[in-house]
Image (cartoon, rainbow, N blue to C red):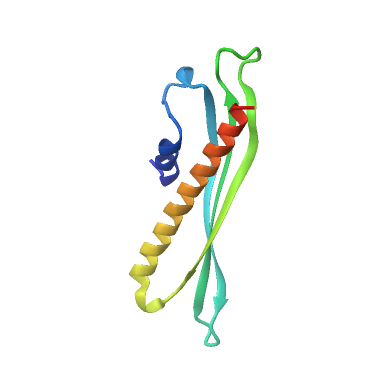
Amino acid sequence: HSALMASLEGYLNLTENRDEAQSVLNIVSENRGRRVLSVASDGKVEEYELQYVVTFSAIDNSKETEVSSQMILPRQSVTLKRIYQFDESAVLAIEAEESDLYRAMANDAARQIARRLDVAITR
């Protein structure tokens, strides 16, 4: 399970059986990125920006709908960014911080996806 799926389980009632699902959430892609944000005068990296992008869509899978598999959330993305200070003397701590930031972004993305799905279903 990815951090995103683990977080989604906290916000949604997930099932492995598609026939039991009220709606079907399709995670199209989940991407991470990192870029240098600032550099010191000696050329060493001072800050990085982490980016986390989840692209998804959802269809209505309930039996009450007249049209089966009606789109309730067209393909869309959640994009999150975090900045962290880089200290090359503490690389292991930085790696742990980066991992924690990605996990937090996955949780934020799951919350946003669940909220969008909830709004779409209750329309």
